[in-house]
Structures are given as structure tokens and as C-alpha cells.
Image 1 (tube, rainbow, N blue to C red):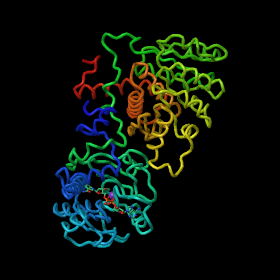
Image 2 (image 1 turned 120 degrees about the vertical axis):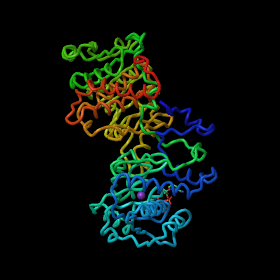
Image 3 (image 1 turned 180 degrees about the vertical axis):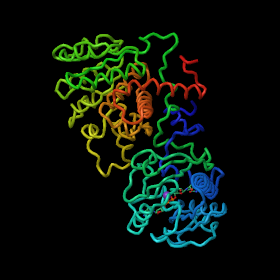
Image 4 (image 1 turned 90 degrees about the horizontal axis):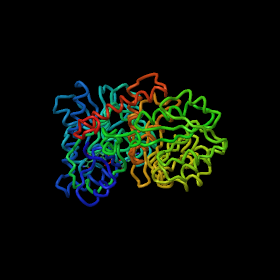
Length: 522
Ligand SMILES: NC(=O)C1=CN([C@@H]2O[C@H](COP(=O)(O)OP(=O)(O)OC[C@H]3O[C@@H](n4cnc5c(N)ncnc54)[C@H](O)[C@@H]3O)[C@@H](O)[C@H]2O)[C@@H](O)CC1
Ligand SMILES: [K+]
């Protein structure tokens, strides 16, 4: 696997010429600075714009049969891309009209050059412009979006969305903030979005991902020198980023080499801790022990085979369960319940200093009073809140939370000193050092009871087997999404642990095909 993300790469990017990972996600502002730096690196802006417009024209011709194209151009360089694409589609024999939102005289720089190169008629862009169009190219606004589209532009956006005409958006659908994936106002829904150089966080975060339709990222010849000083906003989750640290079983291995998970469960909701423990065992932990209140011991022991079950003392103290230092990775939360005892159990696990995953009730018992928890956390801890649990720990989403989900997860990781997995269809994994990874392989079927328990088990299983916290969280989220995707419609959380071997096999093939041997599949 090439181009793995490591913090050192990012730091190296500031000094040595570190090639920027293909999974790096750059903000629109970072792309703007790269655009401005390109000429000094020998690539003038107009060449980038010509390449961008050509990528759009190519993508359109690959996806649609020739039809009457309407290119809606805006007042900036996004519009410039549109003029180039219009010219190239016309040169390819397609019937093309260009409608400009804004005045021709106001175009400047590269965009003015592009409009001149089009050389054809330019009509004012109004909702009526759409009449007769068989395909719309959205070149109204791109990385330069700075506020909610105002009335006239909103009317145009609404007309595009109301027309039953396919849309190809350039860079980002108009109205979408490429940095956060949010829309300050109305936004165009595209069938295809063609972006350049690297994807933006807004292409993976919701609702941005849903507005883009299919996403293509074209290389427009941006010189490395214009990128080398950029530390990415985030990364798209991919095995390239963490497969080097993946704890494949070694041919000379022993179960103790693969760590021992200690999971603490509760009296009720016994299925949650079972799901988590089975996932931990499936994904790679050598041993898994589930410690539960005496009242739940018989149920759990009767339901589990390879997962060992032991009864906690009546007061729920964990000293005996923690006595064996080989129990190197801890999980608490699934099925724990909300009794006050849970809070002291969480703090007892954290005091051991071992790797620890806190999920569900282990987070909710600190609702509204996070300080005791935040002070006890350390860098080998992983928190796995959904939005509700997150808000109860770190405060509600405020409209001013600029940067959206990415910013909130990053701030929470910094504040807590732990890895934060802010779950959702666009799960964000953030580390205290600022690294952020956005996952986009989760199918909607994962929105089912118990899937979070399975994810928590996957994370703690990889921690037990020796994976660092951030990499373990990223790998677990990716495998969890892939396992669900392979199960298809109608999945239940209890199907997920059994689907992990298939997901692991896909990962193993990807790793091996990339030239790295998986130690057990040489
Ligand atoms: N040579 C270059 O600079 C290249 C730039 N690229 C294109 O350039 C785009 C960025 O161009 P710009 O920075 O000119 O910005 P845009 O073309 O995205 O926006 C144009 C202008 O619209 C105004 N605006 C922003 N939000 C608005 C709103 N809600 N209502 C009304 N007006 C609004 C702003 O003044 C903004 O500068 C990228 O998205 C990409 O398509 C690519 O062609 C790559 C090369
Ligand atoms: K656009």
C-alpha cells in the first residue's frame, strides 16, 4: 500500500517534498492557495483551467450521449471551467448554450480568458434558460461559495433541481460548502460532480456526499511544489492509511500474541455485550473475556463459547477482572446500563492506563458532567459516540460550529486527549494531534440496533492485537462498513460479526495486491 498517512508525512510535507497522499482531503481554501501557487511552479492558472474544463467535457462525454447542453456559468473561476468545458463539448459536436449568471464585463483573470476562448453567444442565466436543455453543467459557484445563495441565484438553483434534467457539477454542486459538506442555503443536486486534484471534505461529509451524485476527481496537472506545504484538512478512510499497522496473525503466532480483550457488561441488554465480544474475537483478538454482574452470568455463559464469561463481585468492582495484565484492551459500554456504578467502573478501567474503548452507556453516564471522564482519558482511549451521545458530552451542535462535523470531532479529540469516532453515515475519526479521517463506505443498512456494539468490539479487538488507537479505529470503521455492504439488505447486527471474515479477506487481497505480504497469506 503506497502513500500511507502518518503524522510524520504531514509534518514532512512542511519541509521535505512529501508527495501528498491520494486520500488527502483539501479544503477549498487550500485548493485556492495551490491554484495561486501554481504559476510560480511553472503551471499558469489558465493551463489548470483548461485541464479542469477538459476533465469536465471528458466526464460528460463518457457518461451521457450527445444532447443539448446548457452550461450555467458564474462570476468566478468555476464559471471559467464552465466556459472551457462548453467550448470543448461544442468542438466535439455537441449542441451547447452558455448562460452567464453575472455580467460578462465583471469576469476577470483566468475566467475572462476562458469566456474569450468560448467565443460564442452568452445569454443571461435565468430560470427560463433551462428550457429545452437535455443536460445542465453547473459552473455557477465552486470553491468560492461564501454565503447562502441569494434570491436570484436561489431561484436558479431551485429551477435546476425542479427540472428533470441530468446535472454535472463542476468542483462542487453550487451551494455546497466544500470544507464542511453543509449548505448555508439552497444547493444543486447533481448526478455527477467532477472535482480536481484532491477531493474536499464536503464531498464525503453529508449532505455534501448526497448532493454530489457520482464523484470523479481529475488530475489537472497541479504541480507538487504547489501542494507540498499543505497539511490536509482530513483523509478519506482507506487501507492505505493504516494497513501497515494491521495486526495480521503471524504464522509463528500464539493467541496471547494477539492480546486479550476484557469487556465489562451489564445485567440487562445482554445481547449488546455479546455482539461486541464476538466482533472482537472475529476481527483478531487472541482471547476475549466478558465480565458481567452475577445475575447475567448464566445467560452470557450459556450463550457464548469462545468468549470466556466471568462474574463480577456484587459491587461491580473490577480489581479482580483487571488483575491479569495480559488483558491489555478494555471495552465498556455496550449493555452496561445507566446505574451510577457504571461511572466508577469506567474510571476504574481508565485508571489502569490500558487501551480502552468507551461506547454507549459508558459515555451517557457522564452526560452533562464530562469533566471527570475527560480528565481520566488518555491517548490509547477511543470514544465512539453517536451524535446524541456526543452532544451530551461535548455540547449541542451550534449553528456557528463552523467546519461542521469535522471541526466538532477534531475539537473533541483535542479536548479529551482520546481518539473520537463520531459515528454516522459519514463517520469522522479524529485524533488528539489533529489528524482526521472521514469514512464513506457505510451503507444505510448499518442504521440498525446493535451495529454500534459490533463496531466497538471491532475497535477493541484490533487494539488488543496491537494496533495503535487511531489506526485501529479507522480499520474497524472501514471493515464494519465493508462487512455490512457485503451483507446487503435486511442485515441484523448479529449478522455482522460473521461477515467480518469476508471483509478481512477483501482487505488481505488489497494489501497483497499492493505488494505488501500479509504475514499469514504469503
Ligand atoms: N486556475 C484556477 O484558479 C483554477 C480554479 N479552479 C476553479 O475555480 C473555482 C474557484 O473559483 P473562485 O475562487 O473564483 O470562486 P467561484 O467561482 O466558486 O465563485 C465566484 C465568486 O462568487 C461569489 N460568491 C460566493 N458565494 C456567493 C453566493 N452565495 N452568492 C453570490 N455570489 C457568491 C464570490 O465572490 C466568488 O469569488 C473552483 O471551484 C474551480 O472550479 C479550477 O479550474 C482549477 C484551476
Ligand atoms: K459548481
